[in-house]
Image 1: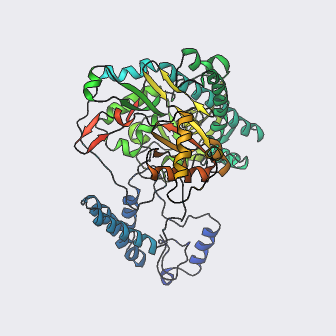
Image 2: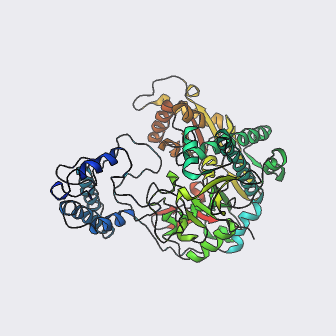
Image 3: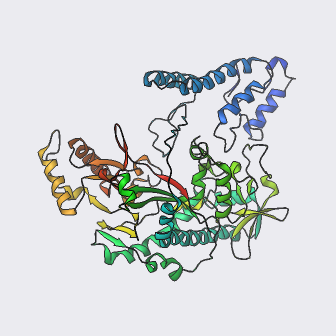
Length: 537
């Protein structure tokens, strides 16, 4: 927010009007702003899903004057828009509220960049919190089947976590060694990492993790190759324990216990009671995925979640140092300080909540532990690790392993841990006139479907290689899969358009399939995921 009248776009609203300022004071302040010694901006609070309300309260606390008179009505109007939005479910009314909020934001220069395609970037000016009481209950023995049957796969995730963590620590040690220090103040260390093109508040840590995960991916793909011709392959304990058997790394338990997104495939609820069902592990995440605001806000038992997270972290402290992906939208803001206030440390130059355990970054020191880990301390108190935390799994997400041109469905006991998938290139479709309502397009895709044994319902997205070539790997919206019905001409057109754009697509079976969606309602079947937290016992 900037002051009204003759103030420059870099001038804070808190600068007094020129007629009230002593001679030369404004010039001095402007000079300090230009040198970035003073920050001329309202700071957005870190890790706060309700940050705008806090900014509104900041403005309300300003002294009376032109700046407050300009900005407070706008802030109040936007807060009211959110309230009005929550009170109506009528689509046209909601669209009008959206449009009005966008206009107000646009008038002060806050506009979404055109063509922005980043994952999870906020598009709507108002974020909606949704809750539906569906009275869903599931027995502990039924859930326990997942961790019992899929224990080798969970071991694989945890071994990979520790391996990647050891590689990340090695990369950070190299930064310290390059500057000839075994310890550095946190701001100096972050600056040294940026100089080494390893920005830790940006993608630096994740980049190190991605490189380490490529080693594991390549090795596991080699192990899968003898089974690539199968539609489904049951993994052995040896398959899943190959990391611990073949790689050297520092092992640790804290933070490695995953949050699993689970689905239950069955034709009906009665079929489940008869034991006719399959569990599917859709995704594995770090445990902090249970703390996204959209999850934590609707959680009925915060204390139970906190106890589980304490187990999964082995009670170890951890710190926030300004990593960008922790709170770039309201619904993905990670509520670590609410869930684990005794373990979480705020060590960032960002604006933090005064209730949090905070230390000034300049009063902390990055150092190398005896086991080679790179950690943070203040007054000789251990504050946590850079590598043994919840950030590095972003470098091995999604935790999946594909072979070209076909990867079998992977199973541990009765639990599906990876769906069957295929790759297809634009050359395989062949030539033809695919414009308009094209008989040739239908025949070309039907030939591919028969040759590759594709089911009717699939999901598509560009392959890892195609995304890497386009420079969009891991951040573009195209990384999210799109549903395709291979018996719908509209879907065939979408399929062909995506294939032409990317050059190569990954095709993944829809699982559960439509006839395995056991949640029935008056207007049809539903599918859903259970976000769970797997903890040591």
